[in-house]
Image 1 (spheres, rainbow, N blue to C red):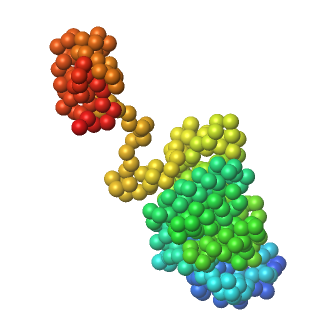
Image 2 (image 1 turned 60 degrees about the vertical axis):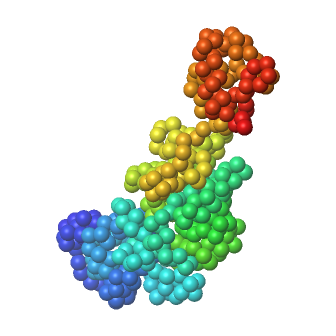
Image 3 (image 1 turned 30 degrees about the horizontal axis):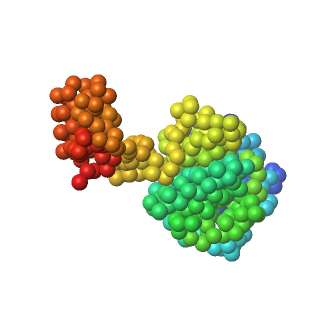
Length: 397
């Protein structure tokens, strides 16, 4: 007999009723919930921590319902990690809480399910969602914008500016509703009446952090607020890292605006890179510790440097349609001339100069200078006047 998850999946687990410990009194409830895929997945969102590898393997190998049956009828030690939560488990109570807050339950296979999550080794068993946005359609054209909680004013302005810029191009902004860059990105999208999604590390009925409660409510009014953990779950530190994997894979790309060398945002970017999403980062002052993580990602070629929404769109948008022209400085008079004519143009002034004087300054023969002046006159760059030739900074009449 094998006591691990492998033994349960391949049917070699130990069976028998009644179960020892707290599972003993819940067998009928577990079997009832196991008969409905949606209820079974809701139960697993309460029993297992987000990203739990044992639960993920059980559900993937057996199905959510049979995996719950295994918890009710088998006594392998691999299942012991889930048993302490059995006494408080009530799927109906969780559904009532969700209904009270206007939330709905999504499971894999639903039309609204973000299919990018299926790339994860341990995808969420279900999602608790409140807000009118169709999650699947919204995530199909979306970008995660994440960064430091202790963000600088520069970082918050930049995050809001880029978020607003992609929002007007019908790209949804996904973030974690935290202080700093997350909140700035959400607000930037909302400022242009764009769609934005907040992914929480706690239950769907909680507004965390409490200081962003109004912002989270605003997001739920027009976009979507998403939670993997069951209602009532607290925002534990480990759940933030697990939350990040959802943000990284439910979107097309991840943009990091300000991140230290050790930060959750770099964790999000790393997960996005592992799953072949586009990763971008914005630069900051080289002396800023808040941007050190971004600079390291750019230097190691993990992330592409971007500075504005148009550069983001070039990486995630439609080929050709969202392409941008290469950056260049301000055009100056004479930039469009070939080198030979430019030498003659530079030798001219606003006061008249003779052909010989121009030739002397330019280091050209008189004949070559005369020919260049003729071309410059045709191009509207030079004009013959009494006493010689003058330069035209604008097109000569």
